[in-house]
Length: 143
Image (tube, rainbow, N blue to C red; front, side, top):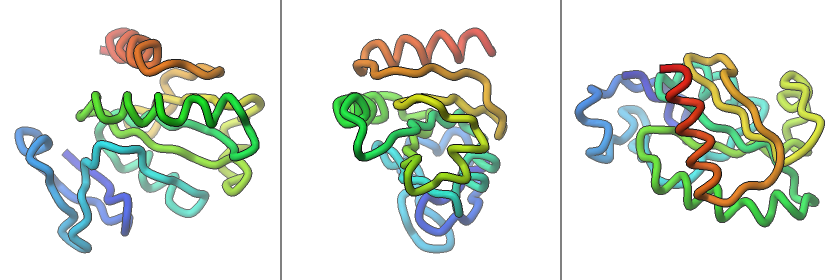
């Protein structure tokens, strides 16, 4: 299983059975499977999403967005409860290039990536339980 380090962007190979053993990056020693969302930007987005073999759920948000701020703790709660899914956040104001590439028109928008490709998208704030339900439906639909 390949995992990209959220700190240094190194690709690490971790045996699937060791994913829940708190693996660390072989280059910088950072935790690879931290139970909180990873902060992405234009520079590290493609590498993180494209080279991480686990599903990656990205919250496209902005600091001025009230619903985004209300959803942030719900997103973090869902991240802590889904250890085999990588959760990430991308500030659309700071990462305009990536937001434009994914045609983000409303926020918050959640995009699920698998194998580096977008597989599902939903816009609007959600509570942690609704977010987890939606995520499980998407993962089951894609097998």
